[in-house]
Each structure stands twice: as C-alpha cells, then as structure tokens.
Image (tube, rainbow, N blue to C red):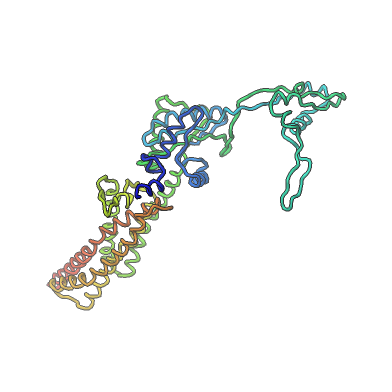
Length: 453
C-alpha cells in the first residue's frame, strides 16, 4: 500500500530528484542544430530578471556597436571564450544570433515607374494594400472596435511568385502593370530583432553561474579571463565595438557599497543607544563585546553550513541536512542583512546583565574585592535565567525560517543562518559581561586605595 501511494504522488524517474536534474535532462536532449540553450529560469523569475537587467538571464554581456553583423560576430567570439571561464555554466552560455532571418525585399525600379507616371509612394501604397492590407472602415461591437481591412486573397499573395502577378493601374495607359515589371525581388538575410541602448545597436551574450560560485566572483573571473585574451591577441575587439558586463551582480555591487556605510553606522547607533542608557563608556563597551562575539558566531555557522559532515545525521527518519537545507552559503546581501538583525538582538543579554549589576552596586556599594565579587556573582546568577529565556525564544523563532522551503525561503534562510549562529555563541556574553564588570570595579577599588595612600 505504501509503495502504491508513493507511485501516485511521485511520477518522476528515480534519478530526477530536483529542478536542477530536470534542467540537466533538457540540456542533454536539446543539443541539436538550430536549438539553443537558455538559463535555468522559471517564467515569473525570468520576467523579474528581464525587468531588472533587460536580458533573459541573471548575467550577461552587452555588446554595443554600429553594425549588427560585427556585433554578432564579436558576440560569438565571446561565447566561445566564456565557456572556458571558471564558474560559468557551459550549457547556459549563448550569444544572440542577430543576423540570419530571411527577408524578401521589393526594390522599386524608379525608371520603370516613371514611364507609367507612378511615384514611389503610389507603388508602396499598392503593395501595402494588396499584400499587407489597408483599413477602410471600423466596426463597433459594444465597447470593442475592429478595423475592416481589404487585401488580396491568400492564394494571390502567399508566395513571392504569386505576388509578382499583382496588377497596379498605370496613369499613362488603361492597361494595368504587373508588379514584376516595376520591382525587383531580392532575398536577403536581415536582423531577427533590433535592440538599441544609449544610441547604439546592442546584442547580448547570456550566461549563468555554477551553483557553488557567487555571481560577483564569476563576473570577475570572466572579466580577467577576457582581458587576458585581449592582451594576448587571442580575442580581437573590432573597431567601434564595446562590451560591458550586466546582470543581477550589479545590484549586489550597489548593495555592497551601501552596506559599507550602513554596517558601521548601525554599530555606531547601537553603541550610542547603549551609552544613552548607561551614561558610561566603560559599561557600554562591556555590553558591546556581545556584538563581536555574535559576529564570530555568525561566521562559524556559515562555515559549518559548508562542511559535508555538519548535521549529517537522521532524526525520526529525517536527514537533518535536508531538514535545515545545509549547503554552502555565499556572503550575499541577505547574509549581511541577517548580521544587521543579529547586532540589534545580541545586546539584549548584555544590557539585562549590566543593568542589574549597576543597580546592585548602587545599592550595596561594596568596599572590598570580596564584596565586589559577591555582588557580581549574585547579580549574574539572578539574571542567567532571564538571559537564557530571551536567547532561547529568539532561537526557536528562527527554526521555522531555517527549515522553510516555500517562496522566499532562498532569501530568508541566508538571513537566519548568521543570526542563529551568532545567538548560539552570544550566550557566553552572560559570563563575559559579569567578569568585565568585576574587573572594572576591582580596578576602581585598587585605584582609590592607591590614591588614598
């Protein structure tokens, strides 16, 4: 019964275990002439990426120039070289095939139409009306409007040979002239799509990264590789052609530049808030040590997520690596946002401990080293349980995020990983703050005794 139920809910082949496996199967069977690969994107994801980058891929190179053929040729050279770059997914590299769509050009013989008293505009109008159609009126169907177009029947315009027998009235005689006497039919290869940016024609070379590589590293590898090829002469950049890398990594660069300002500014604000609470730089510095401890804990957890042995065990038949989605995590914007959230949380235990210790010392006013240590020990013991409860409830709140697999989990999980690891290690701050507080008070007593002597 169990086997039958499993077969109902799982129709995939045994070796298909993830969307990556499906994409690999697609790339294997599409290695055919005329069939090109594409990045592994879902429809909505593709739409969002196109709105952000203008391309249907998370990364790419925009080749600009004055000539479509030269842009396509250089794009094909870039495609060949990009396949050799470390971190670039070989099957996803694809340069736009810009030129190659067949066109039929009707070249008007100006001398021939002049003999019949026709102008270029007259001939173009007849061609448009007979082949393309001309809107002569409009029908009204409620709120809908439809144009009524008039043109030749399909059998008289469905191939170039039939179009040659379209007759055009002459102004110099009563006999109509066949279109073949007035135009020359040429078969040419033209652009499939014409794109332009910044006043230049543009073509795209699309590519994607391997799973274990961050986007910025892949782009930097590609930049260095292409520059080396250009310097060695293996890749020639035609005159008038320029290229630049584009894609989601540009947003990462912008976010990184902002984080360089936001991160120290956040730490400064946290320290200033603590100072406004304690009115003491020393106590504020003691509490602030929890930030550095948590910072280390966050990086330790990121390192553990990249180790193959971490959480490699089963609990109630469920593999913990699969449950917590353990895999290497790159330092993305989401990770740094997780660190920012961590910094705001980790100081709670230190503030709780330091506030109570300060109140106990204001009440007891110890005058010896033994009294200082007794007061610190009493205050620390009384605040261990509340501090542990604060940390435990926060850690439990992160567990659903770490185990989530729905929409948005690819962003939320990297945010929660450093916060979870930082809070685990930050627990030791409930011991660090009392020790530092005790050392500070003992040093103050010794300084007073020395001053009295």
